[in-house]
Length: 362
Ligand code: AHR
Image 1 (cartoon, protein in one colour):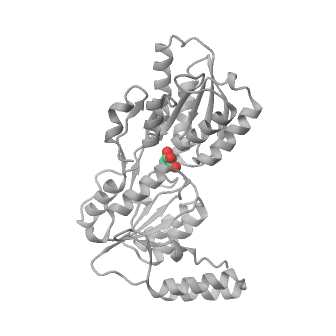
Image 2 (cartoon, rainbow, N blue to C red):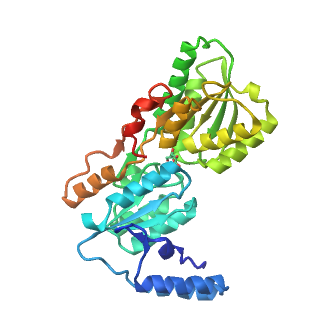
Image 3 (cartoon, rainbow, N blue to C red):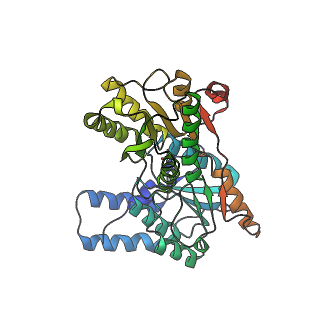
């Protein structure tokens, strides 16, 4: 058995600054185990260690609801806004003890975190999955243990009776909105009959945000005989990765063969822009390439106002209040109103960005 002391090392309790290490005896044990792990210890010692950890019940804060949050990682600025929303909402002053687990972009680590939170008998788990698959067993275990799971942001491929509710974005609709915007723009520019070559930068394979957006985009694009997705590459929603992917792509194809870049989030578009800047490729309102992305981050608004980004389809990261409503309903013994709850989202482009930038909170 592998030693997995990471869980306690990444657990944080949301309080004043929302980011201090748990100060209980388990943390000390964890650090001790980690040191042993770092200096190399045998498999037998690992098994023993797990037993020691699991033999000790974690300290409970009296009167607080214990919420375990399993986050995807820190792949984008959207994610930071989403994490901060939870950390600011589920604070001690409002009656919560939040145990935050950073999935570190590892689906396996997320599954392990779910098992650890169930073992800790938290009152609720908020699961923000990286990918849809791999949850069958862990979600059943949570249900059997009586720990309610609320899924947020992306979805999981299990029967929806296995969890309490899901809240998040309609990613498929976001994809369609992006292409609908392109149709309108090209019509205004009298370019609807031109051959249009599109490069698609995709998010993480298996993640609902990537699956849904790609489906919506591909479906709408394929309705136009003269439009073609010439390249489709994955950059995992990450800016640095997108920059490398785009630099590589520009080595392989001539930038004059690209009419549109659709990036499945703003950060990947920022990375692609850096790559284009380095290669001297022009894009945006004054350039040759139409730029479309998702999230509607503050930086995307700045780029739209500068004329570098044409449009950003909003993906709303502020999910904490919606999740809290579900929890409070359950606490009061009320049935959950909706099994699936879609958050509201808009489309912002270079024309209306300056009107809305002042209202943006992420
Ligand atoms: O699941 C939501 C997506 O994940 C956001 O579009 C992206 O920026 C994030 O990393």
